Image (cartoon, rainbow, N blue to C red):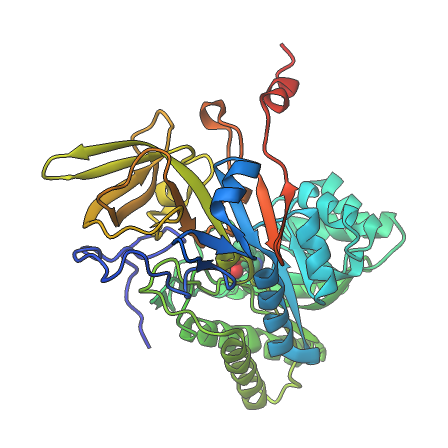
Length: 463
Ligand SMILES: *Cc1c(COP(=O)(O)O)cnc(C)c1O
């Protein structure tokens, strides 16, 4: 079990391996199925197509930049998670990864539940017809107004994040004459990242109630006493972009330890345990994510084993994958504007978007892949950096990438695995307009989130 410190420090992000792009890949035209959505292929002219539609047509019809989302792939991944966990567990899609009304409908149809963490996400979920009992409400600072709306709507659970919130939710539920189903989010002192986890992580973070010092046990004690609350379980979320299951093992061990304490003190066996999300995806060919069925098998085994050892009935498990469902299903389509070779260094390739549509590279040093997709090319590979159009030198989309030496303005590039935390974290920096999300399926493309317009910008600016 690895217990080493994490090279990226306190960032909940990806690990950068240095010198990783020292050699160009054998074939720049090849598309690694690990990083591309399922229906992506190159046609006979070398043009990339997804859902049966080629990117030149998409660019013409919808403009660039655009997020292009493979609906069949989204549904297949959602279904794979649902099937892997079966009827004795619940899968909650983490809406913060990417949420739109179309996505809510797909999730509903595929039998998944939904995590929201703000009034806006709740409104989106409800407006697209997600039944409230299938919604979980998260967040470390839910406003009283948000709590009231969630309780009134009848959300299936609210995940309590602090001592003050225990009282706040109980009070609002009582005022509304109801009992709200709740879980308590605890921090178990495990911090997991891509390939390492720290079992003795500081609980020095804003989320959850620390297990340490008996604080989580005290939270349970208080929640059990309040008439407005029905405490159904304990929640733990240990990190993001995780490939190694051993962090979950330690977390489950500690959560089950708390369940045992609760049973011994109160004679109550809490019926549910939520292990959060954070499962990793392939951003580059070096990443090797697990399949949902492997993850389900592993998590179920861990919890069952820990409960048997503690002589507890195995609680109902829930998980909250966000990135692992939507991440791989979309790519960002850009047009090349300027190509600037810097002798002896690298070539800077500027595209028509940047940190406003993908902040992850600037924020987390995240790694991405990129390919020329409007044609194939036999030109020699050149070391490039794909950058955006913002007035900021940190405006980098792909830090190191080999692209064909004949790359020219007007070519289309695509950055795969941008389905999660790109549109949802997009900004208007430099008053750049946020790109649309175009869903493709069976030879048809439709806009599910339209491109922002200057009118949209000016509508907010009331002068
Ligand atoms: C962010 C988050 C998730 C989803 O994380 P992914 O890395 O997208 O799977 C799930 N649960 C909670 C509580 C979160 O904060």
